[in-house]
Length: 301
Image (cartoon, rainbow, N blue to C red; front, side, top):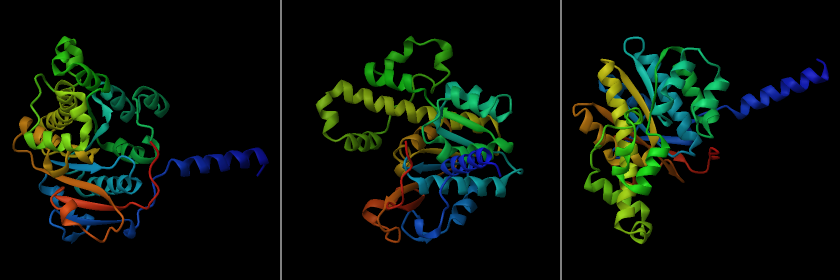
């Protein structure tokens, strides 16, 4: 092999390796039900049979969690398609790029143009690309989130600021007025913010929870709309764990839009020892709780 071709070969191999997910092994994680009983990933896949939507709550820099998501999506497709549609729904893409996502899935545009136009997260290639490429074979991908510019509008100027937008812009997030966050979710959000919310004053603190709720409501509305248009479909939705922990946030919003939706929540959390389920921290954080090894290298965002 001539040196120039050998160099190119090595470069391509190294690039492919850099873009690949980690190889999932058993010591990297443990799966539990809501009460702390050890189970297998197979239990989640089996429960998908009676579900409309599965919400996979991740830590965004969790390389192990991303590999688990890919494995669960792969098994869902293998087990339930072609008997029913299995769609991938993602917080990581915003509604206004749905047309770009669809063009890529249909092979109308190249991956280069897809990435240039869809505003992917910086860890897309390592963490989300494998799922999108699997979906590209025969599944739908839902760009589920509200555009960040509108979430920012609410955080700066309040939820009523959205009223000034055009009718077309309003199609890119949940219908106005979107539902109020629950008291439990507000308390959880304020606890996360800690003293920051108090220092910002009541108006700014309210704006923040309403910007968070726009996020939740839009993802929920996107899932509900897809299920309404695709009877018997199964949606696998990816979002940050906070949005769905304890069946709050996005799950509550989903029940506003589609009250009878059968939703399963899987929450992935870091743990120093994945074999130790701590009831005080982990119980009821999801219908399933997956502890992932905190010592594993993190995804780069």
